[in-house]
Amino acid sequence: MNNILIPAATVLVLRDSKQGMEVLMVKRSKRPPFGNLYVFPGGKIDDHDHSSDYDNYCDRLDDISASDKLGIKDGALSYWIACIRECFEEVGILMARKKSGEYLNLNGDDKKKYDIYRKKLINNEINLSDICKKEELILTTNNITPLSHWITPNIEAKRFDTRFFIAYLPKNQTESHDGEELTHSLWINPKIALEKAFAGEMPMIMPTIKNLESCLEFFNAKDMLDHQIKLKKEDIPSILPKFFKENGNWVGLLPGDEGYDDR
Image 1 (tube, rainbow, N blue to C red):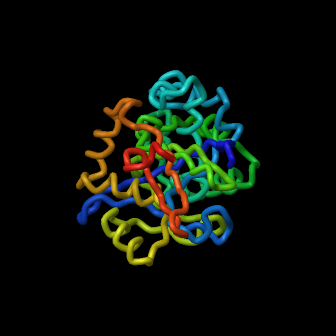
Image 2: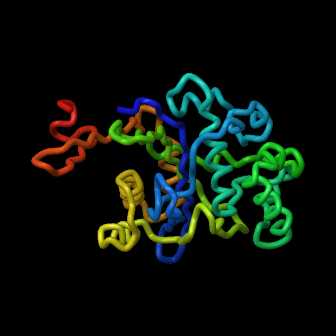
């Protein structure tokens, strides 16, 4: 049994289309622990994600208010920072705007410069706060809100304490997966993604499926974001799946399922 939990953040980047809401999904490379699975951009919290530098660059969010949102003592702003950093590293989407109020144009004037920043960030040659300072950016943390909280079952060798968030796709930006950690990316309606998952066309793990299911009650992404922003920490409880063998087969239970508390 492994009781060491690695803090991690994952973000469902959403956009609206004529066909309804779409979510950005990515396919991991063969490397463990999520080899060949379809997931959302994200990863573990890095040391620099905790830097106090970010207090100067977050839009209407500081560590005190972030920690209150997640219901933890302190350090919660690092989850928002990790969402932004991982999203930029993995798919080239940067949730930020210029201090002047202008949107970044990563499809045009700003593309070349930020492609270089992205490579440097991936290679640990620069920090996200360095980019904010150099380019006078404000991270649009007000566009990112908690969705769910999943804890890896204790039967796993590597366990994560993962906060899932949703965010709306910024203007003038297009995804471009990194080609190393990720081998494919696509925008897809959550209902279609689930159909493909259950048909075996898009392999996914339980948290991915459940987070997609939570999107189904909303036709458009802005409504979902507005709904989630209003929720309190009590509305997003921790989910720790429990797995056990019964008659030679693995059985999984979630909080609220019959027999969960007996395991």
